[in-house]
Length: 374
Image 1 (cartoon, rainbow, N blue to C red):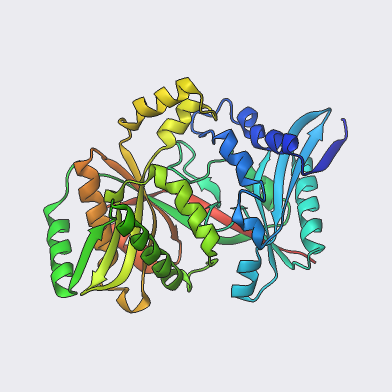
Image 2: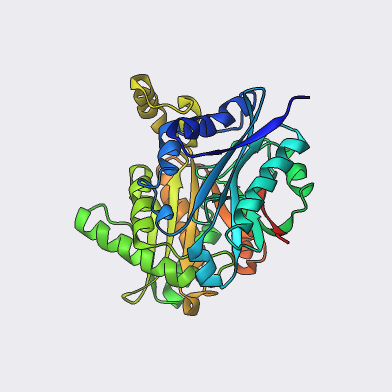
């Protein structure tokens, strides 16, 4: 059998090859959602992605007989290391044919690169951090992922485990289908709002007020999530970059801020599931693609609750249930009849209980893996 070569890449032309590899690996998988090629290429350009301001990222391609057979990234995350006081390095964007040798060579190169930077653990998949897509799908392969959630082949888990990795944490994706709001849930929401003196409103659509709302959400996110497993504080530039990428798909009626009296105490961000559009565009926005986008935009019937956070002193008061209630209420009024709450840490007992009480069920499980670098 021909030799497998691992290539360390930097040129834009090689980055495009890196981005396009999944299009061949998943061409027969109806659940895979093609990313926009232009957006993915920009993601790996240091001048376009503020992640590169504080950390390093290296892309690797695996080739056999001039054919691409795999890819991986190795990357540091200094924000993570400073906050958690550790020396964890990361891998991400792993894709490969079903060949243990390809996987071994890719992970060996990624591990060596991280050792050179004094990392003692390799963790992933992270694309590039918990603030981006992360986790390997290990359960729930029969349906397409919701927006900003990954999808992969079933054999990837074995390829990773065979390289000596162990489970670090599972992330749950809860699924819910609802034709109409239950009276019980509405009574619960009314009771919590009165009892806890909580007011919830959606994101402002006015430009000046919208900026203030986004700053409030950023402040709350930093405070509410800092005790969560894997939390990585975003820089101001990273937050601005994220907002700029999400604003075109944000529906203000699905984003909420909770107030105790007049103090902001929590937030929730829901997004229409634009994956239905991405699946039709096959990675490119051409003139015909714009027509497709406009046509299918009105056919989106799914939404995802992307992130939610509450200040510590206001947790365990049912406010998270209020967020779900208002998301469902506004979503149903707009024609959404299906939703995903993701992701939820497997050991986040409170959030898991709330999702289950609402009638949601775990329909996908994503796994993070660790391996010591010795």
